[in-house]
Length: 199
Picture 1: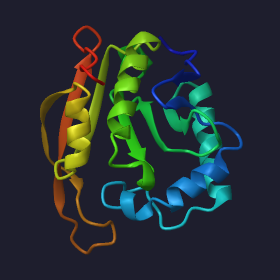
Picture 2: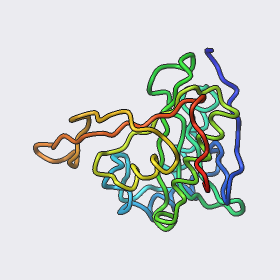
Picture 3: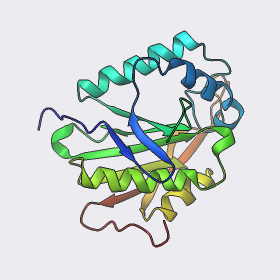
Picture 4: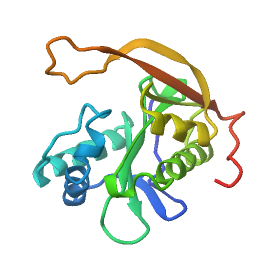
């Protein structure tokens, strides 16, 4: 498989998963700027201020990659309204489309965190990914000290596969001597994943 006509959207419990599109820049900038303190510890891409123009360029870049079937960055949007609750996606970090593997990443807007949204989004991504996408294996990685991210994977029914020791820089990039941190790896397979009871 060298190309994928990717599904455009998926309605879930109180939110919609969809491709980013032209015009999402304003909502994306507001969401990122309101969440910097929440994101900066574990998201190396987070910046104190993202302009609307920068966010619009990012949204268009995400859309272009989607149409080229090179990466699938997903927007988490409320059922109604133009705001953005967070971002996630299916990333081809374990090989190309032919391998039918994708890594799921996620961030949640600060004022939407801590109320179970992350788990609901991950369950929806797994459900959608195995029902309408060609994925056979989906993975999730998080910093070993990111207990919230670890719990999201566990509650969504993903299995721990191991610890990648010294896998990443744990300190800020500008630190003179960055400390190495461990990464936890979780995964699930199309044939073995079942929606957790009550989720």
